[in-house]
Image 1 (cartoon, helix red, strand yellow):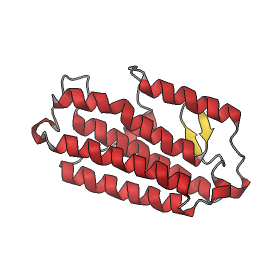
Image 2 (cartoon, rainbow, N blue to C red; image 1 turned 60 degrees about the vertical axis):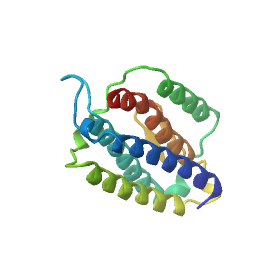
Image 3 (cartoon, rainbow, N blue to C red; image 1 turned 90 degrees about the vertical axis):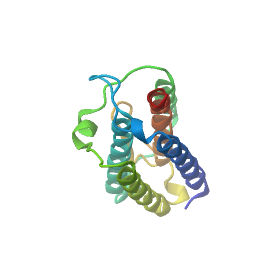
Length: 173
């Protein structure tokens, strides 16, 4: 795997393990909803997994024609900066319908973890296929900001987890 991707993937994995370790400390809260309009810890994690799973599927598809994809530039860097800021602000966003429709329930934290492990293995496999000269290719599509490169994709996944982290922590207290 390219060293840039390996570094970002390791950060993403560390973040996931920290989040899951925290959630495992409070098993009784896993399915508790604060109210009918709020997600439980289970639903938040399922949302993160689904968003990641759909992202990996899209990247796999685009990876087949990676050499014909255009390169990202300053505009995409600006879009990524805006995306990063949006994820760090305490704003609420409506989850994309595609993600909501594809999200399913898990019977336990163990089942959820097993599925997330599989998604991460798929992501790792995809990243291992990308060469250094392909890092700037537009093979990821964010629902709001459009096409980005693979490094942007991994950084967005990190930001997405970071965005939901405070929500999970509030529910665990």
